[in-house]
Every structure is written in C-alpha cells, then in structure tokens.
Image (cartoon, rainbow, N blue to C red; front, top):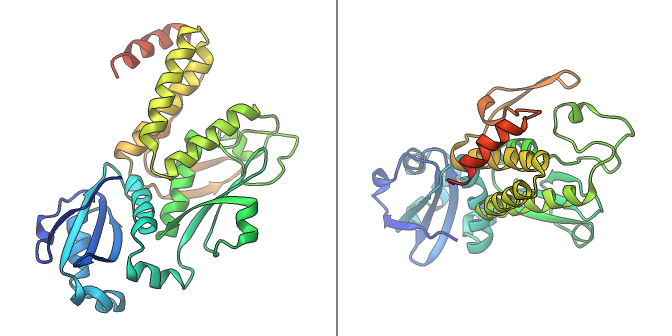
Length: 281
C-alpha cells in the first residue's frame, strides 16, 4: 500500500491540485483521514474551521500528508483501506453514528451486491462479505453503478425468468448466466473495491491474449471491453452523477459517456487491429 508524503502543518499550499487521500497527524497518532478531488483545496478548507468537526481536532495537528491518486474512484477505495488500517481517532468517533457505508456481497452461488450503513453483526457476516468502511455514501453508490458497467451483477436474490430492464442496459447477467464467468467477475469486482485494480487489469490482459491465441475472438472481445473500461475508470474517471430518466427505457449517464460506451458485434478484422494494440500495452 502507498505511503503518505508528510509535510509540516502549514504546508497545505504545497499539496498537488489532484485527487487523492490526505491525513492529519499528531506525532505518530493518526487523527483524521479523508479523500479529495483537489487535495490542496480540500486540505486548506479544514484549516478554515468551517464546521464543528474541524474544530474538534485541527488544533492538535502537527503534520499533514497526502497520497496522490489517478482518479476520484481510486481515492475513494484507498481512503477506505487506510481508515481500516490506521483507525484514525476522529474517523472512528464519527463511525459510531452509522454514517459509514459498506459494500456487501452475499455468499450465494450467484452473489448479489448491495450497500449498507448498518454495523456488521455476526449474523450478517455469516451471510455476506463486507468491504469498507466508506465515508462518502453517494460516492460508493456511484462507484458501484460505474463498476456494474464493467462487471454486471445481481441486486436481487432471484432473477425473473425473462429479461429485466437492467439486462437491456447490460447491467445484469440475466436469467441464465454462465455461473463460472459470473463468479469470476464478482471476484474481480471485490478485488477492485479492495484496492487491487491493477492486479485485475493484469489478469484481464493475460486472459485476453490466451483467448486470442485460442481463436476465441468473441470471448476475447468481451474481455477487451472490460479491460479498457476498467482501465479508464481507474486511471482518469471522475465519479459521475446518475440521473434516472425511465428505468424501462434508459439510464442517462451525464458524465463519462465516452468512457463507458460499448461497441457490440465486433468483426474478426476489427479484433485483429485491437489485438495488435494490446501487444503494445
């Protein structure tokens, strides 16, 4: 896991104007960890003491630090992992009011994905895996929607025998999924949420080449689409705002249209061109 670049308390102006995760420390103690679209702007705002939370700890801060990320989504995931690792005093205090969120993955043969802000009880953990905590509820919900474009998943225990509206949008595996492929995609989704997106990309790239050499071009094209969509998300995607227009007709994504636009029914010749590009990656 990446380490914070630590500076003196009055050095917030030296922070990059990029997305990432920041920390406030008192000697060796972690006081607070947060994420930001703009590290410099967000960190400076804490010193303005605009709310009661900042007033609680800001005078105790001795050093500040940051880890720059490539995207807002990467910052969100890294923030959750760092909070879990270091358990900062004021993050933990505020966690008690149930404002934190978790992503749940059921342990069923065809797992469902859901989010919750409830505590992880023993009974709940027997039925599902939980990833978190995530501070920003709206951000993790948007992230799940974005990742669903790459790794379609179920949100209900039992799918109907006919295609649902989500199936029409390629967001749901449908009534008769390939169980092995679905389970593999869920494992990839979990890996991304746990901060191992680069490993997932590496595995997708390897699988693409294997499918291509085996002349399984249709399968290779699907993996290629996943590879490039996930790469875009992890490298430079901003968290989009999702506006539901009519679930039976469409979901309008106001941001990142080019990032997630899928090209269907690729011909063999077009795949050959893509394959040559992949070899250069």
